[in-house]
Image (cartoon, rainbow, N blue to C red; front, side, top):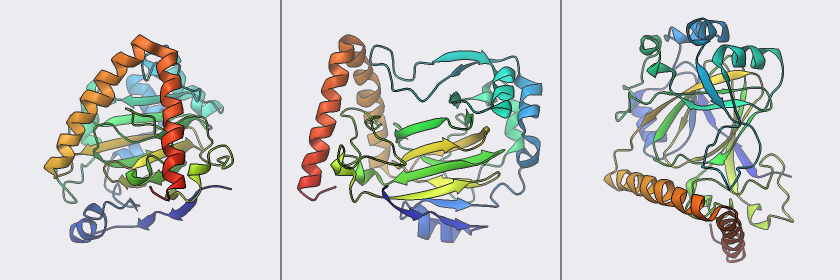
Length: 292
């Protein structure tokens, strides 16, 4: 058994008016197949090309293991030269992935290979294009982005499985208190509803991204991702026009980022266990009350 999952809408192209009316304003996900049709990156960016320009860069690597409460959030499992890592994901399955890497900082000329879709919406944070790499079988745990941007997530070189949930489900997803990620003890693809009953009835959306596809993820959307092939993605971030949303972003960064990290470092396992128990209590309370 799994969640109740609907398919994400997919279009080849979309007009700015239709995008705003049907997806941006409604905060509804969408895959645009041809958004990158005129991007030089669509054909140019291969693992061999990236290795040729940045292969000697040392990069942090992450795996599928549960976060260690004794270490800072997003602590790397290993380090490797980017070229060696790209060879690895081409050669064999691996859990290792690269998270939120700004390759443009090292090679600013790469910005000429993409076209930021300003015709669809404004507010893009042009200084923060982030890249993500993964070997087949690597997983990005269920979470939403702490600063609450809209995301345009373009995939290159293979396939990626993505499952999405509206933020309204966060308690039923066992969201950890003071955090933007869920309890890591259940399998999103095959959850144990006896052990985690609050997941029953949770509704989400699902899509399989292919080379060149761009997924629009609205602000606050939870996302879980699995690389089906060794491949990589680019995320472009844009602020929501709402002042309230921007204020929530700042609050999240202060409380769920700064303050929570300090508490986590001070109390380590005790704090981790406390948060997990509270996440379970809140989720099951919401489920029994028939609430989100």
